[in-house]
Image (cartoon, rainbow, N blue to C red; front, side, top):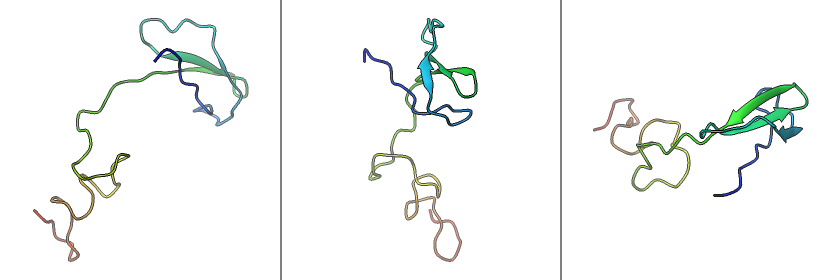
Length: 85
């Protein structure tokens, strides 16, 4: 990937007036951005892939908020409130 991804909004104030910073990123520390609204500078960096990956049979995307594996998979709860195994 040769182009850097641009953030859509400031992580501190939520404003969309962002500009690339003149500060050097160097050493894989991520791209620096400046917010004109709150006068803050920040960096964005890709940290890596998660080791757990996706659960088999789950759709590609964030894990279900109900817990590991989602409902109906071993480790979830049955309708009576007990843990299924």
